[in-house]
Structure formats: structure tokens, C-alpha cells
Length: 373
Figure 1 (cartoon, rainbow, N blue to C red):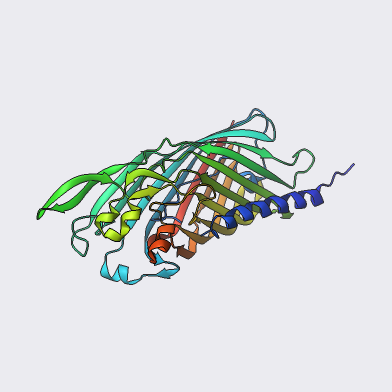
Figure 2: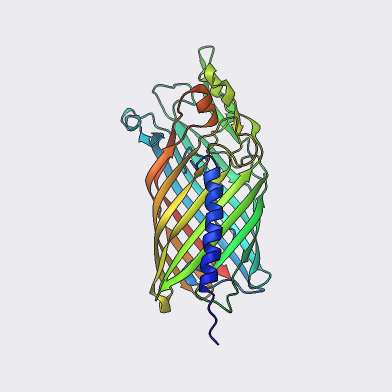
């Protein structure tokens, strides 16, 4: 007997996508990387299901390493690029290398548990944070080490034995404040006509953690469109209830009107992806994909206050990728290229009737390796 659950699948998919869209919209109209502190958040579930149409089975393990690289240097205020910054040479440059080490265990064919340990190294060069805020030599600050560990459970809503053309997974978890949210480095400060080195907290975009215990919500789904082609969507939202930390920004030393940004905010974060995977050589395990990627930091959090200093903003990218699956190994390479970058007004920007800026990258490089056993 042929079993068909396509109508039910479509209804479930639309309902969950609608719910997730409402969450994003409610987060201050969803207003990213670079100075916008979007941390590396690879999925806690099985990120390769849409590519290979194979989920983890009961008793299986999967270990993964997900690497991200970007270099941000283009400054935006709203969606307007301040190209003069590059001409003058006073742009802020962030170079980030991030690595997520993950492990997933499938308790059943549909329920799995994951843990992700993030590591990162970021170098930042600027003028304004050091002694000469107009011109002169560039000074650097760095941060490297352990970030905020994430624990999550994920559940596939469709029985894969009854329906093999698609599935929907929902996930929930917690992000723990294991990363140092008061990472410091040496800054060149002018005091009494003398240039001295002083240890201060690095910029928010370099901080290894955000200081909050956060809730994680996730959805991912895929469905076969036609021979060798599969559509995919995924969404992620991190809910941080904490308002601010006691990590100093020293922004009030730049301008007394920035006193309400003396401490770092603890922001929410979101991302969404959608596109199509195509099996070019399915027998050889070679797949290509093309989709869109939307990620950022909202102006206001879903829960709690949104005071302190944050750079809210979002970026929309077109995301080509290629996947190679061989035996128990899967390698995926993606290079999202930015089309829209927008540094939105923060709560304190609105209070002070101004508009802060942020630096964004032109593209990202994602490389993911997974092995199951």
C-alpha cells in the first residue's frame, strides 16, 4: 500500500515556518558579522540532511568541525556604505577565524542530542580605540579561546520510514556563558602627554562570550522537488534575557553623550537560510546548492531589556555551496556573498537621536566536515 503524507507535510511545514517568521518579526522587525557581534552558530542538529537526504539513525554518532572565516572592513550606517572610510584609511578591520566542534547522538531515528564547543581567534585593528583617533599607526587587539558552549535536542516530525522525500526538525536548547565576556588586551592610551599601555576589554565583536544564559530555538526542513533536486530551509533564534554585563566599553571617554553605552548589552541573535540542493553526481556523492542567507542581531530582544552598547544589524547574502559525501564522511563548502548590509539604530541610538555605524564583510567562507559512526 502506498503511503502519502505530502499534504500533512506541507501543512506542518507552513505552520512551523509561519511561527518562526513571527518570532523574527517580533524581534524589532529583525534588523552580520564584523562589528555586528554575530557569533558563529552552526546548527546543533544534522546540517547535512538536506544535502544527502540521510538522517542519523538510532544509536549513531556524528562528530563535526565547522570553520568560518571573514574579514570585515566596509562601514555601513543604515544601508549606506561610508566609502570615504576606505579612502581615508580609518576603517576598522576585523579578521575572524572560528571553529565549532560538535558531537551528536541519535537516541532514536527521530530524536537526537547535540553539544557544540566553539573556539575563535579574532584580530582587530583601528585608530579610534587607541591614542591617535585621527591618523597614525594602526594598533591591534586580539581575542582567542573558548566561546559559549551550546546543548540542544532535535526531533524530526515525520517518520522517515513512511515518507522519504522530506522531513521537518524542530530543536530547542541552551547556550551556556562559558566564554570569557570580559576578554581584555593592551591598548595605547594617552595620559598626561604620555602614551601608556593599559589593559581594557576588547570590542564586543571580539568578546568570546556574551555573558548570558540563552534559550535556543531551531527549525530545519527539506523536501524533494524533482529528480536530484531538494529544497531546504532552516532557522535559528537565540533568546538572551540578560540586559547588560559589567564589561566596560569606555565609550564615554570618546564622548560624554555615550555614557549610556558604558557597558555591553547581551543581545539576541538570529539566522535563516533557504535554497535548493542538486545532486550533480549522486553516485559519487557530489551535490551543489544555491540559496539565500539572512542573519543578524535585533534592535530589541524578545525577552528583557535591551540597554547598554550593541550594534544591531543584519546581512542578506546569496549562498552557493558544494557538498561531497563519501561513506561516513561529509564535507561542505559554502561562500555566502553579501548583497544587503544594514546597521540599524540601537535603543541608545534612538534615545540620543543618532545612528551608529558598523563594519561588514564582503563574503564569508564556511567549511564543515562531519563523520558518523
